[in-house]
Length: 224
Image (cartoon, rainbow, N blue to C red; front, side, top):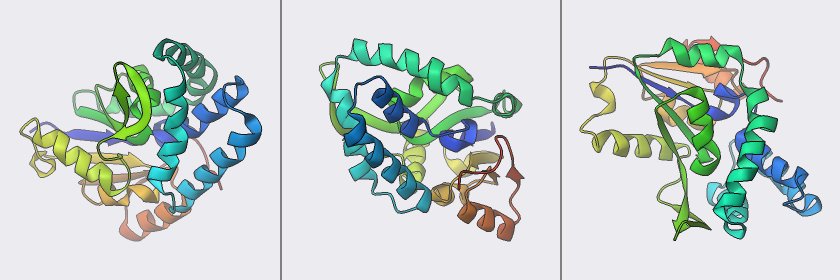
């Protein structure tokens, strides 16, 4: 059976957080009001790092701006976002890690929504993406969420559903990897045969050391 390689995105393949940077990019473009959004964006990011994020509250904040503009305008902003914010966060080490798994079934699995992350997965040449899905109606975003957010235990559920839809199962693979920086991903890290902590946050670093998991440095010390 083919091997499976799963990659978290933010602070794992990327040397930063695409969710946070997308909101900051819109603020810098004058799309979102700085005074209203910047502090709230940082607050959610700190909650995520601390492991106390309410994902539905965050998604309401993050997805609502998508409903306010036509898709063509959002796509244009995203192209600028890729150039200004994402490309500088992609290291040679991250590309080499992805390349190491060429020939395996490769997937990015991330809580960040698929509008933001779809072009990033394509930039890495990764064939499959599981992400939180923004709700759409008649080609426009509504500001809501479709299905289960791809976060914490939700990553396990979404992956199991995706595999089952292809008559596969996680334990049917000879070897499975999951690369992540965050203790929020422990539910999935504990399900694979090769859990790897990438520039891990303090809680994940402690867990990885206790359990003898590899710790990989791609980008430098994890943000405090």
